[in-house]
Length: 219
Image (cartoon, rainbow, N blue to C red; front, side, top):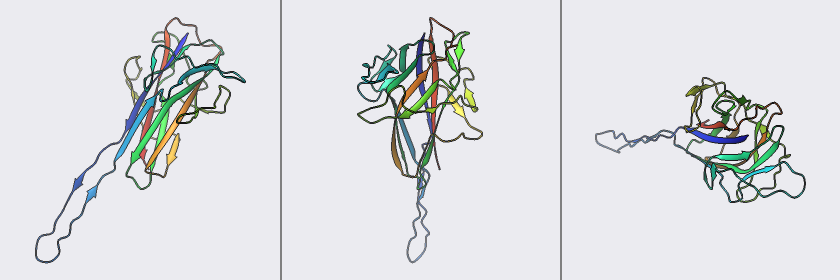
């Protein structure tokens, strides 16, 4: 079976700049009204040497990304994986956030659905897909490095059944626990992923895929 991860990104990005001048004699008062600015970029496969390696002690194998991956874009493609296999995907995602909000921002990241081959076969995101901190240009992680779990969202997903070629969106009534919280106006986050394929995952000749959706909001 093959496993493939796509990305969706949602962010608030708006700016309104205006003036008001009080007419008459004496000093002129000018007031500026500025709404929040939030810029968010998400870059898969952000550094050379990206791609999956099986969980291995000692000397690490050379990453071998699947055909759906490309440098600084495309998808995180684990290539062919096996039941009960455990893998690290190096340089999986770089998140860069800029805001003018003095309180900073929060980042949320969830699976839009379970892994699916687009047909009748699937296996859960929960307990299968994990994230962990990486570096901008170096990475000492292995498939056994401690990591944090991605969860399938409880928000409203559009389309309700995500498809292979089009990124879905998530609308939240209430936000989950944040992946990251920043009090700084600008921040960068570098991530590896881990995939732990369930022993019960159905064997499929098609590609399993899941969309991971990141949402950034001001605090």
